[in-house]
Each structure stands twice: as structure tokens, then as C-alpha cells.
Amino acid sequence: QVQLVESGGGLVQPGGSLRLSCAASGRILSINFMGWYRQAPGKERELVALLSSSGSTNYADSVKGRFTISRDNENTVYLQMNSLKPEDTAVYYCNFRQLRDPADYWGQGTQVTVSS
Image (cartoon, rainbow, N blue to C red; front, side, top):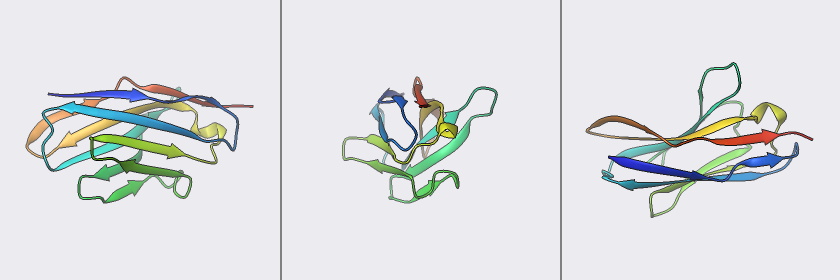
């Protein structure tokens, strides 16, 4: 079992910045993937950014150049969000998957609202 605890989020004006954090704990295997998804009202959940334990990243086209995913040595993943737009408004969810574990772990979700 893996537990995820998210923090960050909130209300920010267009053009502003926020940083989300997600700390993973529990039975963490060496090959894993941590990422962020988001779901806006009336829309499906979509991938925002993904980071593997080997360091490879993948970003949604809509956030490339504005968002950066990173990770520390304590199994915490961060999402630095700059130049935020109203269309970035959504609930953001942390996700964790790992090799040889069929489970798909999700954080509790954190609201990000971009509005003037």
C-alpha cells in the first residue's frame, strides 16, 4: 500500500504561480511513476505531468513551458505552476504507480482556481 498526501493549491490571479506537493509513503518500489492529473467541472480527468523514477518527464501540451514537475529524494513530487490561466482551474490529483504493483494510487485532490 502507498499513501499520498497533497498540499498546495488555492486561489491565484491570472499570470500568477502556485506549487503543489505530494508526499508518497508506504511500500514504494524502485521503479515508479509520479504524476499530476486535473479535472475541471464537466470534463474528464486529464494528465498534466508525469515523472518517472528514472527522471523522464511528460507534459500535456497545454502546460508545456509553464509547469514543471520535479521530485526530491524523499518521494515527494512537486508541480510548479507558472503563468497560470483561468483554464488551468481544476481539482488537481497526485497519482502514483509502480512496477509489479497492480494498484493505481491517487491523492485526495486539491483545488486550483485561477481568477481575477
